[in-house]
Image 1 (cartoon, rainbow, N blue to C red):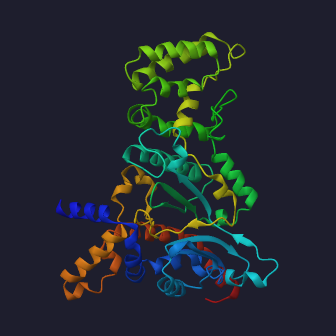
Image 2: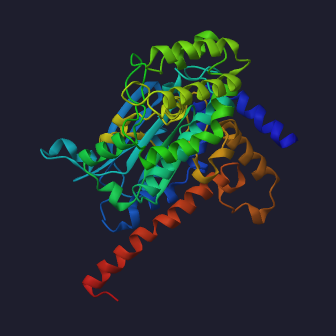
Length: 423
């Protein structure tokens, strides 16, 4: 317990001004360079794969440098320790070294992981507990549901297997789909995948953002609603209290297209004792109305309750990030300057257990490693630095991801050596 209290106090003690002192130590002692190179070299099937990759650094005072490139982990490490970037983004693999892009007329992106970015600020019209940069356990559940839905769709509908999920360090998650097929997708194909996964559409001025037409619901939508169902009552009805008062329930009733049904439901809302009770009344009234009125006589879809659930809880994607092949995305394991938290990978199958409040800050990590080094016996001094800290599990998840990923290039390397007859 005392360890937990220490952890919480070092996390709450972090301030952005500390970054200047803490980052050099983090980059020198803790950043997982070897694992990074293993990831971005993709088995060295293409010898220039990492060398042709764009990195961008944001230095202190928002100095932004694009088109950095590194042939291996050692080069990356030397430059990170020298420059001490406050933020690192990873871009596409180009047809030449990004550092030499000015010399080329045909400098173009060739490959890039399929990426997704989900941010809680895009849920501000449906979350009542926090807004803007603030997050809490109640609204983080939106992220948990989003991870479950997207992970299932990417694996089951597209057959992708090598998916890295990373906490963004503050109020969102990033997803890197690393299968060879995903990295080779054209811009148009990325757009198609992103559009397929975007169910909630239309900006803040569009009231009804989910429309389910036709006699049946697409299996992917059905699966998403099955994932939302067990969480919906706790997330939307209890924690976010979406039918808690007149202003709130009017937002929900605005999604019902038939005025007579809407008026009937408004009366029922006044009678309901809380959001759960009102939801049950609403569902009953909608089903009754659909049964009594044939599809020619009503505008309300027979999937109205599913439409409402999806509008409130389906993942909200920034699809521009997924469509553009040369879009940069924040690198895993960097430190979020405002919160000090590490952008750690997490296991999507245990998304329910992931709590952003438990993610270590750079202050906590540096304190842990100092305490460990002071107390450790000599034989433990050689243990890898990150293993002496709370970062151990996150690096473990990254390594597990890498070992599965290496299966995708083992076959390729054998084909290559066979073709050269190098046995």
